[in-house]
Length: 171
Image (spheres, rainbow, N blue to C red):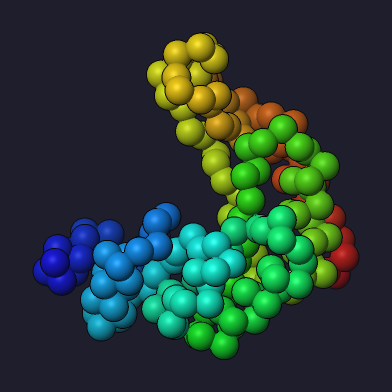
C-alpha cells in the first residue's frame, strides 16, 4: 500500500502534493499515516464528530458546516487547529440557496476565522446534464457543462459576490 501511495505522489509531479479523502474511516486513517511518513499533506472532509478524532492525521481538515449550531462548528475548528490543522469548511454549495452561498463565502468566513472554504460540488452530473430525469438524483452543479465552457449559475455568482464581500471586509 505504501508503495502505491508513493508512486501516486511521484506521478503528481509536485513537491508535497495534497491528497484528499471524502470518506473518513480506518482505510483513510491508514493512508494518511503512510502519506505523513512520506512527507505528504492530506485533506479530508470531516463532520463535526470526526473533527474530534482525526488525531492530527489531516493537515487540511474540511469541516462540514453543521446545523447543530455555530458553537459546535467553531469548537470543531478549534480542535482541528490544536491537532496541527489549517481548517477549512464546506457546505452543499450546489443547493439552490444563493443567499447562503454569498454569506458562507464572505462574511461568515471572515467572522468565523476559518482559513478558507471548499464549495461543493462544481459539477456532479449523472448522464446528460440537461436531462433531469436520467439519474437517481438531480445533477449537482455550481456551473453547468457545455461545449463552449461552463455556464455559471446563481449559486456560482453568489459565491463570487461572497468572495468579493470577504475581500472588502478583510482590507
